[in-house]
Image 1 (cartoon, helix red, strand yellow):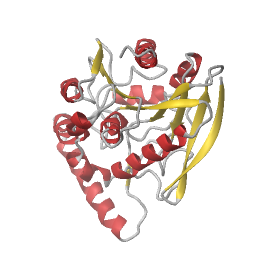
Image 2 (image 1 turned 30 degrees about the vertical axis):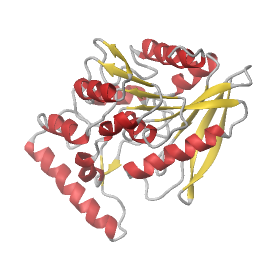
Image 3 (image 1 turned 60 degrees about the vertical axis):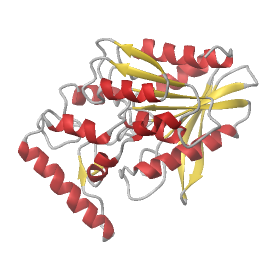
Image 4 (image 1 turned 180 degrees about the horizontal axis):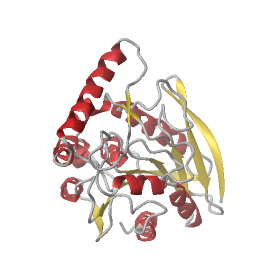
Length: 299
């Protein structure tokens, strides 16, 4: 296996990716992956690229514009449509890689939802893998709000409005913590969030615990799971049975609309699926098995 960094042009700048190239085979699939909410490629995803390469599968793991090592300004702004475009650019780049034959799309958490939206727009994908996906922003936000104190909710809402107004004036983003302790004015505040995210981001210099607050105004209207019935490639949906951040029932419903294969991991939380987590070995093994079955024509 070798890992090289490449730069992919998109939207007047570039996104930066690691290409994990498997040894041996001259005709192999490539998995295009990106992280979820505020994540960067060095925070919990390295193990996936390494394990895929060991199994003879290439990986192109990228940072969105404005995050990690990628270009783009302002920084830390989560724009769903722009992130979809980054996926499309990375897919097109993967198709041009030497020895690659077929591209699969992969996402987790927020990008697990992106997978449904992007796959629904393409007819050239080998497969789609959606890990602990957030598929319905409105329904997810309603559930998360139940545990947020009124004062914290007010701070989040105020910051979102100030950021949205400031963006129109060209001001720097109003930033909030991506993850925090329960009751704090952060996006993710479930009991397992701070510990889980920090564990995944340990030794990840590209990651920053902040995001532009304007994103909160767009969350209710983001419902990528509703597009699942438009996907025409095989889909694997992986659900953490004890997920407090991506409701399992919503993921199951989206998987059903996609006629997808579902794997559930009993007792696993949202952050247990990353390469430092307790469910990682089972999760990545199921992904490799799924992709291998496609190449054998049995999926």
